[in-house]
Image (cartoon, rainbow, N blue to C red):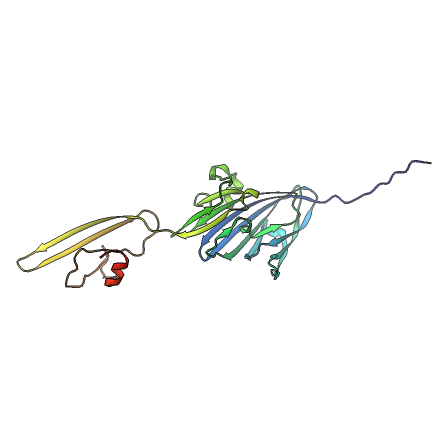
Length: 272
């Protein structure tokens, strides 16, 4: 018998590489994300991108660079089973070996007392990528401070470790934390805790004495060392008979809201 050869032809799939940069800004009870995806093709042309919207995230806007690369995009609402919504992006200009396309997504979510989990920080996860790498930068608005748990395996990065493209996609200089996104970051827990203000205080006392009067004035200078101050607590060893008059230094009006604590409030603060 003659030898037989069976030949099967199949279309070679596109191979798209993805590199992401996520800027996460936390200001409880809300977190906002600026997600930039850099799409490069090793082979073939790709005119559509699809992905899953991570549960808890809401997409606010989407655009591409170059701007004329996008045709349209649509999102589907999250399923009741918590699997997340769907994102589909149609392109006018294909991702090809000769053309890189950037995708910029802005999104937001609620931050609860349970914090944020490392596996849910990315607002979207794109489908069908041949390879993917990413970095995450986190910035927390004062008076909050960033607290981490299960962060022993994180690969932390400095601004100097980033190439020009990635550094431009995040706020590298003002971020509290920059790290490489990978399997080791999945167990990370992230919290924004309100910081207790720390400050230096300088108190100047002036007493004007006559035969039958005593007039006192106090100048208090506060220099914050951590978070901004919107109020201070002053404790006088002896309370005078007359109510105190308050004024900000250099201000022509008495625009300071001040009140005296009750005996019970003083006791709770350990001032009695």
